[in-house]
Image 1 (cartoon, rainbow, N blue to C red):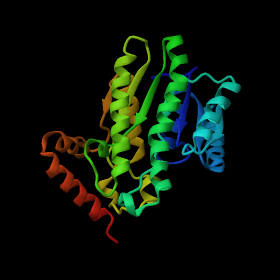
Image 2 (cartoon, rainbow, N blue to C red):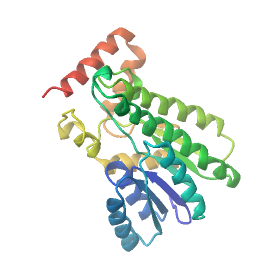
Image 3 (cartoon, rainbow, N blue to C red):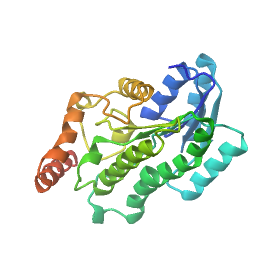
Amino acid sequence: MNYKGTAALITGASVGLGEEFARQLAQQGADLVLVARSEEKLERLANELREYAGVEVTVIPADLSSSGAVKRLVSEVRNRGLKINLLVNNAGLGVFENFLETPLVKQMNQVDVNVSAVVALTHAFVSDMIASHRGGVINIASTAGFQPLAGAAVYAASKAFVLFFSEALSLELEKTGVRVLVACPGPVATQFYADMKPRLEAKRMDQPRPVVTEVLRAFEHRKRVVYPGKITGRLSTWGGRLMPRNLILRLAAGTVKKLNQN
């Protein structure tokens, strides 16, 4: 797909899937608005993309766990006269700890980044897309959103929200020319897992490049949901839909417990 003449805003763009989205979209001609906490990492990536892809890249550092930062991000985009044609809500936080054993602020940060920022940014930029009868939103959920995860309760619930919100919104916008795709990958070898306690062998994870390639292909084909990566990821989502709730709850909790073992 040719994205030349469009602008994509990518959250969590400094590493992992966000960085890969930036690279692939730049290669396809899209101008970029890169958002993440680390301005240094964003600037380094922006300079690289400007040089080899020849696209315009705007860097806006922001911590999306703050509602004030989300509002400032939207204002900054509008003040600069940037028109967003593709919103990639990629930024995410995951806390794999028992709920009451974790400070509340840490749990709430997940809600702010994984849920509140997704809703606020989508609401802010989709109206302009509708007015021009073009554009779209790609939201990154997870296979974790298909079942409750004791030991990662808020994380799994937040990803379930992203999944259901995206599917419903895609139907609401069906006749507007604006597409909504939700991607539900399994574990991906990114900084997301490096920063968390769970230990997972690299061979059990997908790599960012093929995951992003598959997501962008699904977006081009106007799909609502995509399960990028290993087929085992998609198969795992059926357990939460077909197995008895108490059984899947306990099986999923056992998996999280194993990941959290030292």
